Amino acid sequence: MTMQECQSYVYSFAKRNYVMSDESTIHNLDSDELLVKSSVHLPNIRGDYRFNVQLRDLSFVKTGGLCDVLFYPKDEEDLIDFLRNKPSNLRALCLGNMSNTLVPDGGIRGCVISLSKFMTNISLQEESANVQAGTCLNALIIACVSQGLSCCEKLYCIPGTMGGAIVTNAGVPDFEISDVLVEVNVVDHQGQRFSLKKTALNMEYRNGNVPKHFIITSAVLKTSPCNKDKLGSAINEMLEKRRRTQPVGQPTLGCTFKNPSGYKAWELIMNAGCDGMSIGDARISDIHMNFFVNSGEASSSDFIRLIQLVKDKVFQSSGIMLEEEINVIGEEN
Ligand SMILES: Cc1cc2nc3c(=O)[nH]c(=O)nc-3n(C[C@H](O)[C@H](O)[C@H](O)COP(=O)(O)OP(=O)(O)OC[C@H]3O[C@@H](n4cnc5c(N)ncnc54)[C@H](O)[C@@H]3O)c2cc1C
Image 1: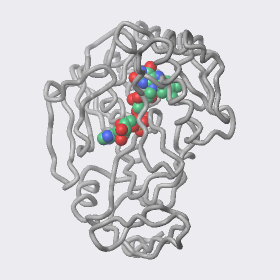
Image 2 (image 1 turned 90 degrees about the horizontal axis):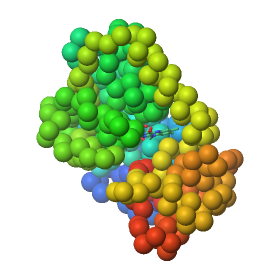
Image 3 (image 1 turned 180 degrees about the vertical axis):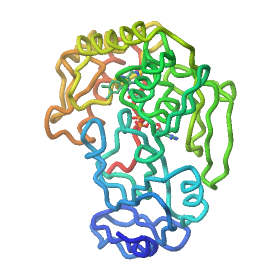
Image 4 (image 1 turned 180 degrees about the horizontal axis):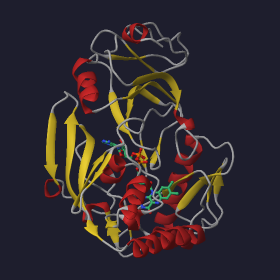
């Protein structure tokens, strides 16, 4: 699609609950009505737009509906130009690799911003790494190992981006990304830039406390020189451990629930008798009970119902209400 066509792209979506209009509101339409009509003028950008994208094709769990527009900014400037010039009624949110995000079957109305195509630069120094937010954690770890730098190698095999890892404060039992984070660079939805020191975020277990209106564009992490063989062994160990304890290769979002203080979510799920439980093709993994997998053609609604069922069962058996670790983002139907 040419830039001219993009600039005045005419949305024509069938069967949607929400459409964008040129007015400053989003109209809620009856789902059986003929749904669309209006046109939204998207700004000229240097990156790429894609339209009516099946998010299930991008999601780690292979479920989820359409998003109206997917925007891959070329760089931070391109993102800022887009945010400053986009129609005010076009909602925009940033996703990473979708390895922790369940998009409902109704998809996402508006624009999904993804930094994972172009904003993946890594610049390494002896004491720090500057990393663009679309970079995969594994790519950063491999780059550090090859330079003999220790950084976040304990997170090897977590399939997220730098941005997603900061928002979720990705971690393993003895390490979190916050342990090496120094500062994050963000832009807000008006296209204004800010730098935030880690201490301004108050990061906690699986929550980076990044305000929702910030898009992380890059981060600075601490690095320190380390023996390459030692680093190589550390990442091999992580890989082996995951192969033994997790449903590697199956569509999943990792741990569904956070561990409540003093408990393991998988143990609570097991003790509640949820072993092997499924709804449609959404099922609890035989290998790790806190991992829910798509064993075929599951929908997001199957996952949402299974999550609720497990929460109810665990509450009945233990009095503990599990809290989701995964993010659910989008429209129900
Ligand atoms: C097999 C498997 C194993 C896993 N193991 C672990 C584990 O051991 N530990 C762990 O912590 N997690 C684990 N996860 C979960 C997941 O990989 C992490 O949470 C990861 O950090 C999410 O990154 P992402 O890029 O996929 O984020 P997404 O799922 O795409 O997004 C997560 C959240 O971050 C926001 N976001 C993403 N990028 C940006 C940005 N640039 N600016 C602003 N907001 C942004 C999104 O809006 C969303 O709210 C696992 C997942 C899988 C599939």
